[in-house]
Image 1 (cartoon, rainbow, N blue to C red):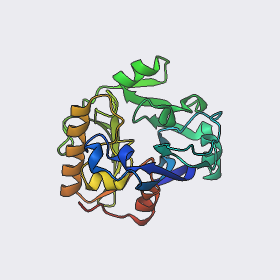
Image 2: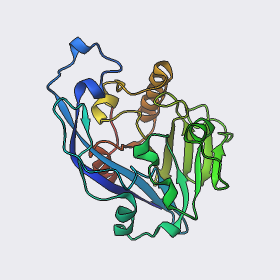
Image 3: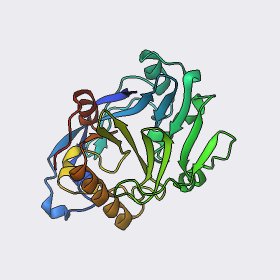
Image 4: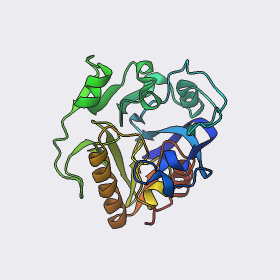
Length: 249
């Protein structure tokens, strides 16, 4: 089983008050401090299946320069999602499953491009996206508890979809077990690793209390299990994956 990054945008930035602003008083934040940003999603190649975790922004999304005062700039466009996938050696027709962390368009933008894929997501996100086609699998999270997470769904051996609400109502994370390491591909629980380490929420959430609880559970899991923290919006996610870097809190 291999996990690979699908690289879409690079050399962006995010402001500290964006990355930390959901938990911190504005007066306590450094408005001049920024963190590197990017946009990438991930795939799992099992040898017999190609499983995508999120599908980037819609292909027609324009490449735009940053604006003055912008709180997050995902960077310069490297590739649209399908082209990036082809550069990794995969055709859209090979994709068998898509695991969607949440509804936002930088994660769900190219769901339309994979004719043979079943799309797994929470019912809340399916409702928000108005998805009801035959290939939509509304995950019931009926596989029981997964470590300290209450609700999980086993997708295949070693791959689990975990209910993790807050950022959106039906937000999920994916945990992949490989070689005695846990790879946590978490969507937007945090936007930068510093926020995870310092226990800070971004300013983007639908339910702040649920988001705080999810972040607490993520931190508890990482403290108790060797975990590679694999992010969407920071190049640290790519580095962590490539170096099998175990997160230390």
